Image 1 (spheres, rainbow, N blue to C red):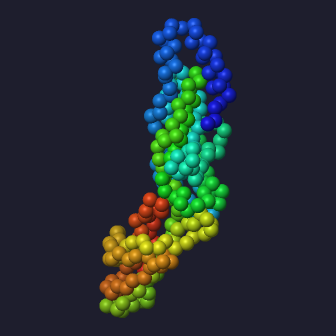
Image 2 (cartoon, rainbow, N blue to C red):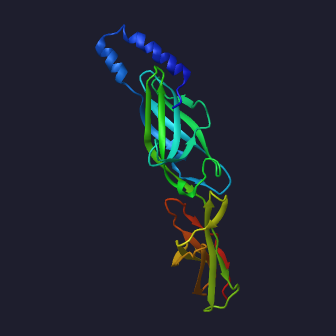
Image 3 (cartoon, rainbow, N blue to C red):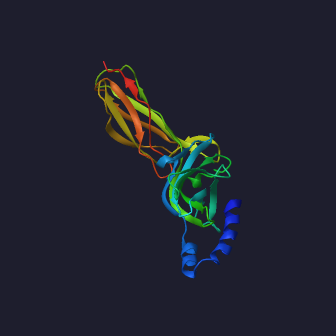
Length: 260
């Protein structure tokens, strides 16, 4: 845990100060820890990381203490526990947080964290729910620390394609819609097919504003998609994936079919 030097110095001074005040007052001060009222990771959105590009995000914490808030520290970790079950760790980029005081006792402090495939993201099993460990440092030296402050999802970015053929096509004839669902592989630093996933085939008639679901298709072992429908009207076909805990939702760009 990172402890600012000024906090350590103040902590020593507090020992001497406590000797000069009544015992009840000293006990109350010693028990007072910073209080956390809000933690925001990536503005609430899941952290979606591709196969090679790094992803930088912000963690903001609002906390209060009678002496004021001096600093925070944040780690994101993945695994069963910090002692022996740790398999992923994302550390803050800065040595000190940027803090903005709302009052003499309350501040909002921010740090940035960068997830880098091949560096601090090296295994696909790291995708999913991460724990957020938080430290808050009061100006009088009190420190609040919680290894399980909250949780947040770190996901493997996904891509999805759709291609409807033939085009143009006569009304009533068969249309084949192919595509592929893939997601980032943090071990090979490439995209790889996402197998066995249910994906919706959707259609939006020319002039309409929304897609409707035609059927659900499951991806092959390579992430491929293929199904057939009858040509009925001009419009756009696309595939749409709802997402999982490890992979975000994604929809393909609509592919226009000219029905004659």
